[in-house]
Amino acid sequence: MKKFIQTLKNIWSIEELRNKITFTLLLLFIYRLGSFIVLPGIDPNKLANLQSSTSGGILGLLDAFVGGAFSKASIFALGIMPYISASIFMQLMTILVPQFAKIQKEGDSGRKKINQWTRYLTVVVTAFQAAAYIGYLRSPQNAESLIAGYGVQLFWLSTVVILTVGTLFVMWLGEKITDKGLGNGTSIIIMIGILARLPQSFSQEWIARTTKGAGGILILLVEIVLLIAVIMGLIMLVQGTRKVPVNYAKQIVGNRQFGGARNFLPLKVNASGVMPIIFAQAILFIPTLFSLGGTASWTVYFTDHKNLGYMIVYSIAVIAFTFLYTALIFNPKQMADELKRNNGFIPGVKPGQPTADYIGTIMDRITLPGAVLLAFVGILPGIIQLVFGMTQGFSTFFGGTSLLIMVGVILDTLQQIETQLLMRQYDGLMSSGRIQGRQATSGI
Image 1: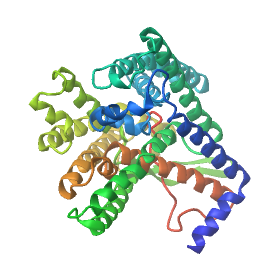
Image 2: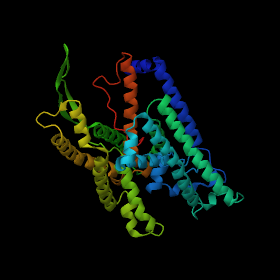
Image 3: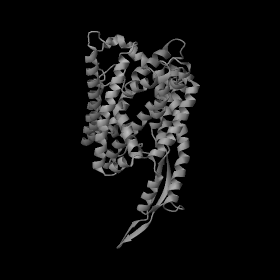
């Protein structure tokens, strides 16, 4: 405890780090404050149906990412998600389209151009999503929340403009946090939105457990211990790597020797990050659009996360997308060429194509267990809810997209803090070793 307090003092004694933390907290406070400002034309006292209809499925996931702003009909109802969608699309374009890949390789100017196109695409995506959100607000189950005296055309125009501007403002907050704050701004905004629902979910679970015959506080303590164990296991999954030994040839220039060092090539077990889970959830949501309002019996295989059929379909989708996305972002040929260019080689493997094949084979072998574990993490909330009978809100923190994002973002932020401490010759956050971050994917 004494070492922890001293570490906090060291962090606060560094002026640059202190300013970064203060600036980040200020912008996050502004974001959370805007999440409670309701759109014009909406009666905030009549949002009960809207909140109940977003308790599950893809809408529940979106509401979790924006900290409940979606169900509150807030000016930040769409949050940062349109920007995430645009970023994912542009990232895939840089992988699949040679022209975009060429622009990205132009250095800083190419990245700026890609980022600018991403912002333009964000405006288009937000406008379409805002129109869909208006249709959702005007649906029969949510129509009572609309103020009758507010004109229909005015409501459409004002809502589209405000939601678009709100998303752009949140995007600007994320970029400012990245530039002048601590950590990746987009990821931190999503994490804060997820964490904002934790107190309410824990309160609901507390009330449910303290009710007579519900198991009492003992079961709640068991759930908390299990949650800590799940988080520890997820940290191992996020940080898990396979180290491939790499040697570098010696070079003698004049009287000095360069190279000859032995290093490792870290291959991540979960190289695709959280993207397979997001893709799988989006794909499973599509069939429900053709189910006549979601009343068909077969929709449980795509919406009810406690259903065994849903778990099987979801797991298959996650494993398939893990291999697909890893194949898109991981290029063994490029890695082998980089090693050859820097006079590096894997012991016992010839440079060039044999090295690429060797790296690709290792990546395939470690991707399979990583994909299976990722699928298990995705269905874990449903399993936990079935076994313990806990509330749905609290069960979502035992796995899935929410927990993966939180663990990854917290590790990245702690890694930046540790780097600042080590640069100024302070002890790091961990005495047993340095904190390793995760591979950032599309700002998430």
